Length: 190
Image 1 (tube, rainbow, N blue to C red):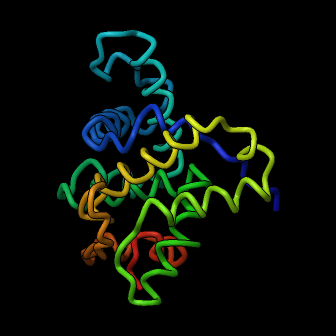
Image 2: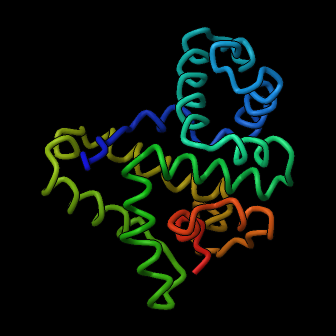
């Protein structure tokens, strides 16, 4: 299996739950035909911002099954946050690896606090291994770290970007039933 490349385009979009829900509802109404949805559904003043965010959100939606998209469109805000987070984990390798290598490890060690040092060490170790991360400027690395924490906060995986206390979300029965077994760990349902 070919290794997924690192994408850092999430730094321009954070979690964007409400916008993803709008697109999910629209996608359902056009029988999951991606060609029928438009960037005009994203309400932004600047066209370049709208186009960039729409592109990211469509990529995220494409990581989800039709059933997951239906849950995204029709369920509680908590489930919407978790499905949005799951789409990010599936699309962005750096977020998935941070969850696997840092957050899950901390939970197993009963350490429920993340720190800036945790993500800095994670990024440093990745930069030693992968040229594409080594080539990131210091400013871009800081932005990646900042947005990862913001996404974790917006998804409810940490309480806030300030205190960074890990919170294990509750997966309701409907959501548990549709998620693949390997995906449940990304939502910290250990």
